[in-house]
Length: 216
Image (cartoon, rainbow, N blue to C red):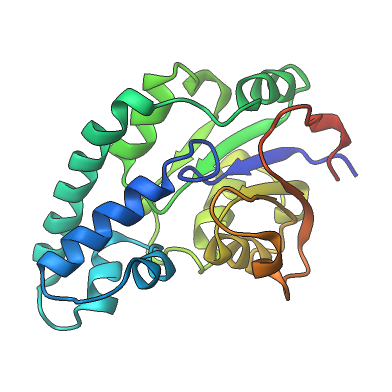
């Protein structure tokens, strides 16, 4: 069955920026007293900012303080990454082909809305997406399925009619729990790291030559 909707994670899936996020979190968390390695920062780089801080530094900050730390970190990340902002190779052509084919599209990210509009407005691709779901639109972030189920609900399609594009283990888990097949972009994780997931239909390095009509 041809999918009716494509749901995209943002960071590491549409833009190759995860190293910037991980490095920023690694510095901030250690400045706050975490004393963790880069690999530990990488393993914990998922979910809402306040959740991330709470996992690494439990009880040290109020929810409001953690949210503000995360908000300031994201603003600094956008300024740092702005000169490097571009879509993953082949994605622009892939989005255009999917759009012309009548496939509905959404972005479902654990990032805050300014990060999503940073990309859609900065790269002039907002017209491809019928909805954007950010951290502030859900109660439970990835690996909970709420982000992708919210995307499907807003698009008016069934979860089984969606294909998710993800780069992260927790994101693929979110898609699996939502009952959605997944294409994995190996921008930061190797294919072998996804062993155990049964919803992955393809691994890709980027979107070059990928035909939206041949995904199922």
